[in-house]
Image (cartoon, rainbow, N blue to C red; front, side):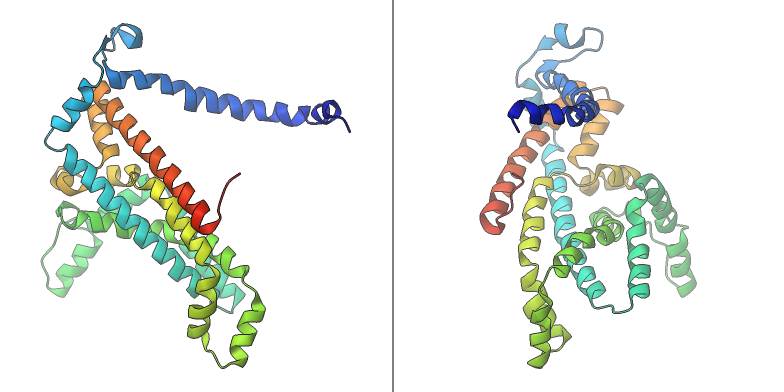
Length: 299
């Protein structure tokens, strides 16, 4: 078959690709023209082409603000905790699910823990606000036990941990899928040999299961580095309030307030561009590390 004949046969596939390619161009690459706002004193009445060009002045203004470094620290702090806790929780739940022998019970547990992943933070945020408010379910139970009511979402030191715990609860079930697939790929003869040698389930898990999925764990941890600046915008937006801005305000919420609430489009674009560049660098580094230590690559 000649190259021309092969391309003729593939024409329907190229036609099928037209729609998704056009969507990506229009909704992903087209808006990137707005990056110029990061280097302008943008005014909506003048538009992109006539707004004053100010170079890196917007970045100087951003880093002159008193809360900028706190926002960057909050982003790294919350995102790092989420990556560590969520990865450990997914591994632990996958190992526990692997030990369940009843297929019906295992499917039931999986359905229960997967369900929160498919709920938006609009729904989850409203439910959590009702539960954690001063007159919510948890505080009613505390009062019944004789304790005072506590405004959990109004305590700055506690807020980052609430974010980590609630997102771990939401995402852990779905995160176990990859680790369960990795466990299923382990040679079962190893377990049979371990049983003959007298190894119990705990030793089998420690000496066979964990080493067997170690490459998957490395890949997932390293790839997570690329999302170190993604602390969960939708979750934080639904849960935070002015009382916890000192510990709960992250880059995404800062950009949201600066751009959409205060119409500081140039500052918001500058901060967003900086976040994207740092994320791209971290993703590139994580991909290189994943290839170097786990032999993982897309192409």
